[in-house]
Image (cartoon, one colour):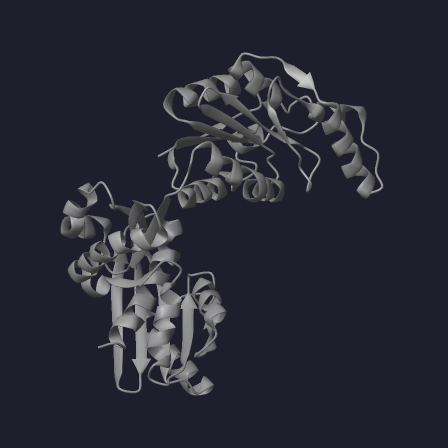
Amino acid sequence: MASAEIITIGTEILLGEIVDTNARFIARRLRDLGVDLYRKTTVGDNARRIAQAIQQALDRCDLVITTGGLGPTVDDPTREAVALAAGVETEYRPELWEQIQARFQRFNRQPTENNRRQAYVPVGAIAIENPVGTAPAFIVEIGNKSIVALPGVPREMEYLIEHAIVPYLKQRFDLHGIIKARVLHTSGAGESQIDDLIGDLESLSNPTVGLAAHSGQVDVRITAKAESEAAADQMIAPIETTIRQRLGDWVYGADHETLEEVAMRSVASRGWKLVVIEAGLDGSLIRRLSAVQAGFLGGEVLTEPPDPEDLMQHVERLRHARGAEVGLGVAIYPQGDKQDVCLALVTPDRKRQFTRPYGGPPEYAPRWAFHHSLDIIRRLLND
């Protein structure tokens, strides 16, 4: 199975001025092709450092994919860096210059002289026309290894990946298999609790099992390498069954399912409607539930959290005003170096109020309260 590394190029990424989304897209595409991804690296706009990163990556893997640094300006050094890593010079390709000029003409514009730099590629490189941008991409083959240089503009990079690079990789590395991931979402338990119950599964080699902790939620990822999607599904299924059996109702969904969708399904299954009062969550609970829509009648954001003993009254008031069967109140109360999260839940057959201490970073408290409150809804309504 082929192995790869991704190098994103740009000082603006290192400085935090822009967020690198290209590496995520490429990583998922490589996963779908069954390519093992070893590392993702970011390097600033320095030809020598980029070349060094490429050479080091080639020592470890079969394929290096770079994005960025193919523009027309002096601080776009990827062409020179790849040539330096391959031990060759760059050469001018008249046909690339013609493609660039034609691209500008479609927009009734004239390229400037510095655009001519984009017609240079490392000697011997396979040039790739870019029909959605002005920066041609290219591939340099060194023995049985490849360097793929792509533009950094996400739209251009994604187009070239799908239309040029994926077909090339399938042929070059004789790719037939896939890597498929199944992600189970849990709420109500911490990472250490889950690890204690499924730690033995985390030592498996194929499929592999790993944990990813978020504030108020832990994801369990099952990843299988196989010759086909059907074969991967067969490998994943028994592991998923075991995990669900061990974790019980901590597991609330999988893959693209969200906690708000699951909670609202619990409400809708009884033919009920929900309203929400929140304080200290910046409106996040109402916004997320509004996206689900079905069964949600809106809510109110209080500028100050009410006294905990009054939260239930606010919930009852809104529930009756909106004609909802279910009312939920969530408020965050600072308590020194920690915070208390108070929750009030009213349904036609019960009233429940909870106070839960939260000792994590204060900026994560709204997210924790969001997950905890919706977890209570889906659990109590499923009793």
